[in-house]
Amino acid sequence: MADESGFPRDQVFTRICHVKEGYDDRRRHIVREFERRGVPVYFYTDFDRPDITPEILNELVTPSFTHPPAISLALKHLGIWRDFLETDLPYCLVFEDDVFLARDFVAKFRQGLSELGGPTRKAVVYLGNGSNYYTPSWKLRKGQKLYPALHARCTDSYLITRPVAEARCAWIEQNKIYTSIDHQVEQMDEKLGIEMLWFERPIVEQGSENGAFQTSISAKNYPRLYKSLKWKWKKYTRMIFGHNARS
Image: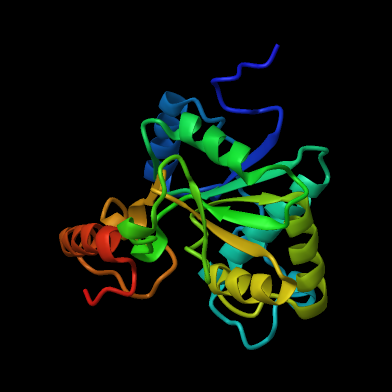
């Protein structure tokens, strides 16, 4: 009999974007963070930068996109969607390797999954507060976890259904990867008619944004204390006013 309070392993394909070598601090963090929250740890390490051949680039990436770390990360997300479609599970949950989970992550995640209504819905649920995007407090409703959004919320943590994975994979086969994965999914999901939903309040936070880790993708590496203070200021003002607040 399935544990109705634990993580729904029988429904959700879970993967964490990572690398085969290096970033040991992130690996240790993820194992510790996920195990204490009761979330399975499955690292996805295909498409590391040394593994990306000219043939892969020619097949899946446009010549104009030339940022190796971002290409590697985008291919990892694509690889996870493809592997998910090889299973018979209805949901796919993807993380990047710098995330922190809420203490009650599993309980709230199950609430959001129930609210989603079923795996045939063509929707993506953004679980984190990427770029400090929030639905303003005055729009929140008691008991409601999922809120419609006009754009994505970064790809550090999200849930998709099979129709989304199928649509995204087919779109990339035809159009290739041409920009960073967070911008690409936002743009192609809009074209594909995929619902974008924000989980409120977020149950994941990105460590490379809140100052816990240095970013491995962006060329801009600000001091971690500066990033932490700036993040906290934006976080609490935008939780009240929304992400269009001047901050």
